[in-house]
Each structure stands twice: as C-alpha cells, then as structure tokens.
Amino acid sequence: MLYAASFRSTSFPMQGLNISDLQPDEILQQIANFSGVSEENIFVPDGAIANVLLSDDFSLNTVTISLMWEAGRNALSCQFRISQPSSDSFFLTARQRQERWPPFQYRLEELLNALKYLPQEHIRSLFELPPDKFSINFISPALLSQSDPPLVFYNRDGLTDDVGEHYLFFVIMPMYQHEDDPHRFSGDALSAIALYFALT
Image (cartoon, rainbow, N blue to C red; front, side, top):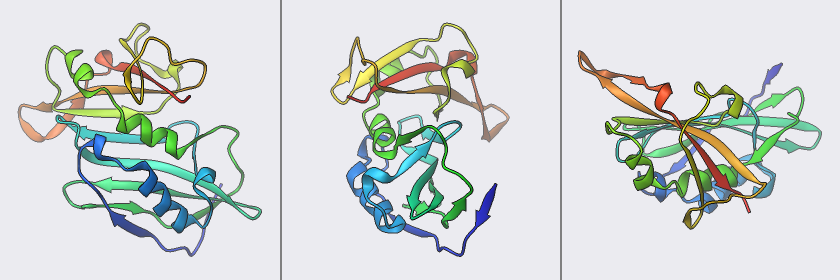
C-alpha cells in the first residue's frame, strides 16, 4: 500500500542525449541531494522496475525508473524520469512513503552503468531490419517471450564471454513505426535480445 506524502518534485539538467552520455555520478549526486541519503543507499526495487525508450540512434526518448531509499524508519520512493523532446532535464517525482521495504533491489548506479555502456554497434548488428526505436525493460528472465533469444554479455570495457555470478539482466526489444501512423510504434517481442551486464 502506498501513502502519499507532501514532498516536492524536482528536476536537473541533462548532459547529452545519447545513452552513452549518461553521467551516473552526477545523477546519483542530484538524487542523493533530493532524497537526503548517501548515494550508495539509493536502490531500484526488483520487478518491473524500469522502462527506457531510445531512438534509433540510442538517444534518450523516455525513461521511467522507480527508486527507493530508507529515511529513519520509513521507506521512501520516487520515480526518475525523462521525456524527450518535451524536456531537456531529468525529473524526480514527489517522494512518497511505502508501507514496507522490498526484499530485493539493485543499486541505481548499477542500472545507470548498464545503460551507459550498452554495446550499441553490436546490438544494431543483431537486427536484420534496423529498428526505429529500442525499448529496454529490466524484468525476470522467466518473463522472456521466447525460450532462446540472442544473448549479449558485456561490462564497462565492452563485450565479454563471462559476466561472473553478479550481473544485471534486462531485455532490449526493437520497435517499428506504423506505416499508416507515424506516431505509433509496435514492439517485436520475438526479436528481443537478452543482455547481461557484469557488476564486478
């Protein structure tokens, strides 16, 4: 159950539009200032925690990431968002109190680095028809729509054969523009790619 609280929202400027331009340290500092806790105590809860939509050149289109942190005896939450081209800033929604702390969570820094270091050229090469957009979702591997999707393993230095025991899993799905409506896009779930980003 969610309890609303009278906390204000805030925003802060972006630095570049490409996903590789993300500045995790700066973003974490801004969110730490907003939340009032240290950067290492800002987490992303497990589950359908984030959705990132990128343009065909991997520039940011829309981002929604759920965040949580502890403040005293309270668990607080907000969402980290961006919507292009209507905004040139990151946006943090008003803080809210949560009834309980979730059993599993990721550090926000890990998720931001997984996005920043995406092997963009390799991902493009895996699609026969170049996507008009890319949709990224951090989900359970059990929710994949196909049993044997292409797998991509990588770290901060690029592609790798082994991500070890500690990794962040997510999927990237190509999206294509409708011929009769340039404002509509459909995802091709059968062409989704599974990505594993090494955390250590």
